[in-house]
Figure 1: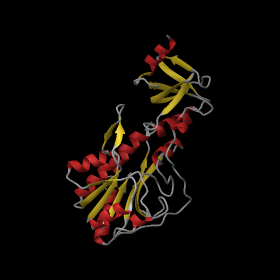
Figure 2: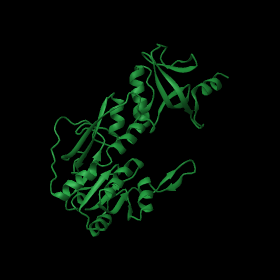
Figure 3: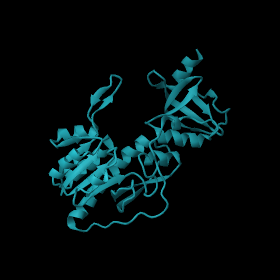
Figure 4: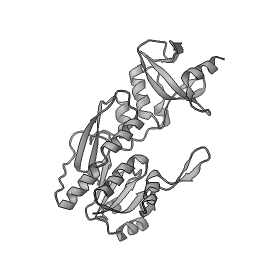
Length: 297
């Protein structure tokens, strides 16, 4: 089938590659425009754009689906659209362009965690399993009927970055199998049921350490916001980002910092966090023990 693929980050690439591997033709890749990257803020194509260019595929860069973009998509005469982490909502005018509509790979057990940060919010909530669902896009956000859903167990120490990378590979064929079923005329979808919950993008203010929370709650927050926007705590007036952490059973005064048996501990309401790698504001990442040594001196 002729497919328009919409995606932006690296985690979308396995699904795009799977479409080619299943024998479908990607007539165009829709991705967000180039964005500044690194300290020098160099304008850089999205990972999906770079992948598409390397394969000689047509690339459309846009964060807004204007009438002009819709005309360009219509001219492609595609059969179906596949969306994986594109990063923008498709308006109703775009959803109506393709004969078989658009299907989105979403990283939650819909209708749970509709929105931009489903895996992140699930980890922050302490979920022990997540899902990947392929559903038909409709006007209402993440509310369309489901064509495919798979459940995955979450590892106790997995961060959002690690889990998303794992899911992107594990679910790489999922959207392609749905497209296969459309091609055979065998597509079956099921309307979503149950109460919906929502997973909006995480603000940096939500990602901080809360001393009145337990170590487990803070660790779940750390897992959910790593690597972006990043878990942090205040040392005086200095914000310190935590890059690697775990839980320790010792009870310490909330917000206090101690070195115990060579480990840097941050006290919580109950239990404590082990800080292994940190990044003080404006500085490079370092071992927490090195940071603590410099802090003391």
